[in-house]
Length: 358
Image (cartoon, rainbow, N blue to C red; front, top):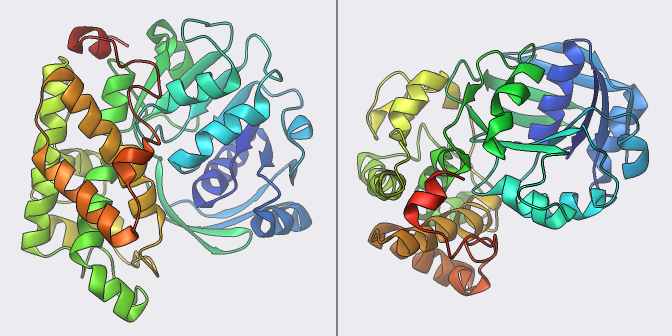
């Protein structure tokens, strides 16, 4: 199959490597603002990986020409932080063809809706199948340009939903060779809320803010950054996330339970289970507070969840507190910026029941 991957960060590089390892013809694209990894992959004509998946995989092309990247594409992955979804959608607007499938992975709260809006596609348009996953299928980091370390490829617990939902099974069938453990979601609200990054990353970051600034992130994010008190903060956020889903009739699993299913964790608690999680072992903290763990997971994640809670009548005091503290520390107004909200995705007028069926 001809596969295009939009996004050459660690996640996109992992998707490209994995798909190519299964014999697919993969083209990799990123914007010219991010040249280093793309240039190395183009030069060496492939990607090196170590860890849970390993070896060298040949890539057909890697570059900054979106038209070349989309050549003969049957399946298109959009892989990157939440703030990349709209630029990628705008980059391919008017260039997609009927019969193609697009998967936004991870969705980062409403990714399929954001992509469709940016690409100029109507929500109900199914001539081009657009789907999203609840999380990235890997714990992965770039070790150097053209090379990745994969700490974990998920064993289960990554949910996929198409928009419209009647195409979910067909999309799962399309990718089952590379992702046999991918599971169908009830709706894009389930994929959006089952995304636990906004629950974990901001809590651990804010609880370790002085340590991050003082050491430049010279500590292990989970093994050393999650104390029992920090775990209680994660749990408080998680309970509010689960309550929002319940109000919409959407089942959201507690993060430690999902973490055990995915292969990250060995126990279903919010303290030592993170510290001793095999899937988080060796992952270092970010070097500074100016990082996607706040900008993405607060600005696009917690703000979205908080506004969604307000829309369906669920109070979110812990989320609101984290948003406020993060805004003060970063000298910006995450709520006021409204980077991704129900209103920005044109779903602010839907009832809880209607949202749950999206």
